[in-house]
Image (cartoon, rainbow, N blue to C red; front, side):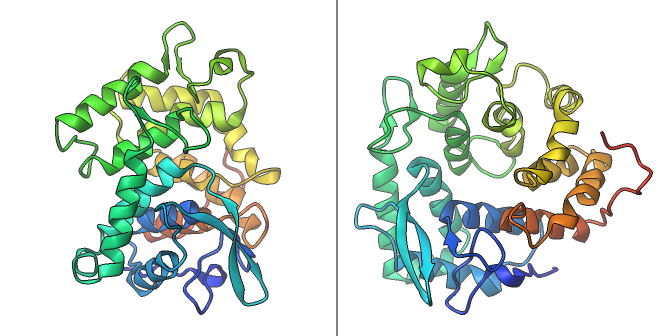
Length: 302
């Protein structure tokens, strides 16, 4: 099994930054990237336990997490999490990938239980979905998909009745039948906001990352239509925003190697810049481990 090479994203303490040699850590992005690597054939074991220990030592008493900034050699919480619900869910999912440590280490079990309690407190029984945080009392579509993925087994097949009911609640809460799209948020103004690449357009394709079953069409048709409408915009994001490697991984998952190759061609020149995140690095290593190579210079990618 090829090993994940975190390059300049990891320091001696085990901390993993958003950007290479960066000074900011958002645990959500680190966990997202590590889980993506592990679930698709990259060995993360040299870094996973050390990262877990690093984060457990900085977990807040209520079970939630901050984002962190570095001052010299010291990492300090400098901002609250962007969204507690998704972060808590993928943290518990990550801990479950190391069952021996979770069973044998009291600090790990304590962390898991605190996170489970904190996530439970964000549940909105009226809608059947999860809220962003105790402060922000609205639900986000993409966050709830990530919580749903925590509650399902591999392949998107619900483990139990609770997970199936949760999937239906997500569909009921966020699907806009009139607009024929998923709403990003439960906030009323979402129906009238202009459609930007992120979060609006990204939200529409996000369900495919988790094999969410309640789409308006079959997954293949749904994917092809999104790429027809938005591929060119996506491939140009790296020039002004981020590389959005998650969508390249999804292209590979949908057997659209052409789009994955185009992404490698367009995005790889932006490694070691502010447009390239740890998630993008993981995706690039995954694709290359699968034998995907950058598109030829003459290939039409727009």
